Image (cartoon, rainbow, N blue to C red; front, side, top):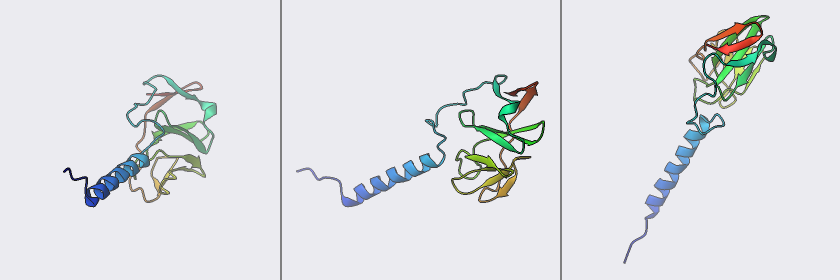
Length: 136
């Protein structure tokens, strides 16, 4: 006679599966999680007209957000929130916003404008050549 799994075994397995799914979804950027950014250094990311003055544009596949705090001044930061690794969702009112837990970052330097994040968004290197913005 073979004994089946105990109630405790089923509850532990179910809980572990649910916890793993929750952790995986928090950092989900819409891909498999294994994919690398699709652009290599030197390739054009955007044109200067794609980035609004006082705002920014999020490039999810490349995991980068490009901002234009002042006319003609372009900055780039990681689009991955330093709190729990969610991809930031919007750029508005001078901040880069993560809707997972409410963290906000300044478009000028990536510093934390609103917790729970405690660390700034890492800066990404870009070059602006004419109207072209490229990853450096």
